[in-house]
Image 1 (cartoon, rainbow over the protein chains, first blue to last red):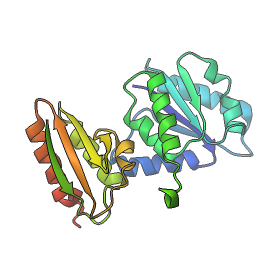
Image 2 (cartoon, chains in turn yellow, orange):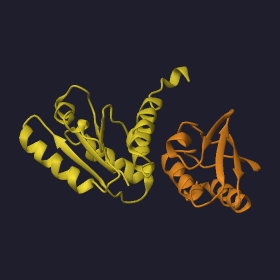
Image 3 (cartoon, each protein chain N blue to C red):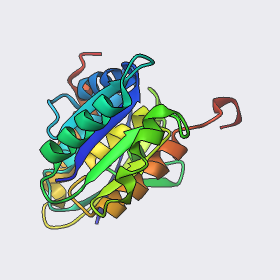
Length: 129
Length: 89
């Protein structure tokens, strides 16, 4: 099973996990979140991320999601995206997270692509639907 | 393959928790299960695909099942709709 790690501004990750748990109605394994705030020390954050990567790695890879591309969490994560067993994607939203949680028994690439598609599909101007 | 049209009667429609229940049930069968609304066809084991149907109360969806346990699957899935997704209303 692919491990999932959210690295987000403040408590966004924790809130999304709470919402996904309510919707899916069960506890979710191999899913962690790390908050980053203006007072966070970058080196401390990296240590926490590296520790979580170790904990979440069961051999199927790790999908890391963050909110805004170019912001501190995404910049911290850039170096981990170079590892073979890790994908890092931005634009985290609830559809992306739910897709990840419910479709993570295949390959890391497949799951990553599905998550990105769900995140995009979930953005709709209802007036124009 | 067997098909059945069902009306969505629960107040909140095919919302997130109802869709989750549906995917959990659909995943228990060996058959392929699809939902169709307004010619849009989605896999009933994928919650995000189901949610994209935006099926609200009063709308009608078609269940399509194909496989070794199709009769059992379509019966139980229809019942989930008919039982208001166990939401009481």
